[in-house]
Amino acid sequence: MPSDPEEGNPLAPGCERCPELVESRECISWGNGPLDASVFVVGEAPGAGDPDAEQWQGGNWTGLAYTSRHSGRRIRELIEAVGYGGDCYFTNAVKCFPADGEGSNREPTAEERANCRPYLREEIVQVDPDVVVPTGKHATKSVLALADRTIDGFLDTVLEPVACPDLGATVLPLVHPSYQEIWISRLGYTAESYREQFETLLDRLV
Image (tube, rainbow, N blue to C red):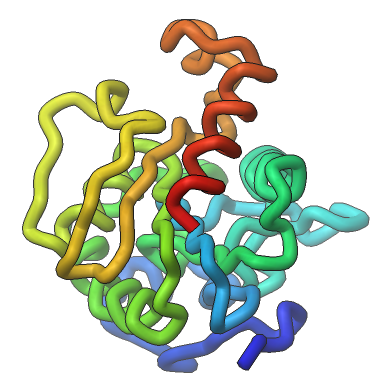
């Protein structure tokens, strides 16, 4: 059954597993999208966001993963462009904004990632997607950790399908949408060829 994308998928309202994140977050940024989606996108963690933005306030304020202007807008536009806009669930490896003390975000700690990993596993089991698409190095590490897999170099995994029977899905890493302009060209793609390759792989795997 599809969930209401305006409400998200709160697995543990009021979670307090990570004291620093409880202090820094405005709200928990839960996954959102159809609960029978074929494609399952995973970000690292919500950013600070902007409560005054007209549309893209960010998950720290909306309670919905990947709703920020920089990363949320870009990944959602990409998913829409390759034809899976209505068949995609969006979430984060860590559900709360990790503040750096200066108004921006820091990388989640290993403990924070581990604390949130059971929620990520529960979401994957619940949605049962064909393809899990982690965006960026940390999201990719978090997803593969669920299958007891590790990576040496993240860029070598981009657009390289990884079969993960333990997850019941294929993992297909992407560069983080906030840095795609930098890394896509360094990987030998144009924006168009990157999108086309992503679409080709999704169509093959779904």
